[in-house]
Length: 298
Image (tube, rainbow, N blue to C red):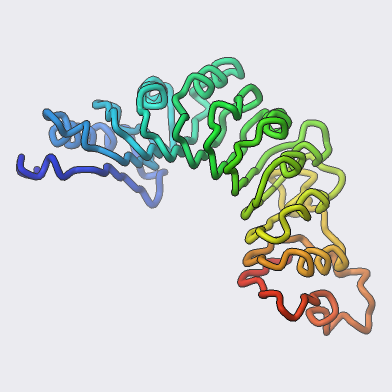
């Protein structure tokens, strides 16, 4: 146990497990007892600024009113009210990363209540996984700069809301989701209203056509990361829909600030005589353009 004079210096709680399959409720209970003995003292909870727990059964024995960063990798029924308290009461929250277990049984309305009643007035970065976001109002996070949605039901409906209420500072959007309409348009419409976007990564399932590049062109001078991964089946990488070499050429030539590009590419019908010199034929950037530092073609 740390001596009492160190308690005012405690600012972070971080529990990282390499293999959560080996992590049990008993492990969490034992660690929780140790943590409670350390932090449940006058003035200590108020000093904690960062809480990160990426294993199951997070410690919920004490609340931390001055959190700036909240990261829970497996929010379950036993911890959801603890999470709700911090979302509602921590006015300094700047970064939130939450992944919910299926046992939470969060309906669309309950998920909306959790997110829309949260105090996101100062939130800059938000990452959500396995929670319905269909009714989440982006106006509740008006200073957001980065958003990551992973396997969230209702992501398409949320993107339709986002298109009419884009936070002015939003520079980064990463989404892995299923398109209920079968079309990709809703996932790119927000780009028309956004400004100076730098990072876009879209892995969208349920599609029968590729994700269009047209909306991305408006940010060609500032875009640093672009990943377009359209799939018929979100969970099956082999169902990917591929782009033409001409699409790759257009992206590289127009987006002069790109550092990372991920694009499934179909070279089967490319002209035979160019097949072994395709980097020279496909990628032809302006002389004053900077080359991407990372290029992933599948």
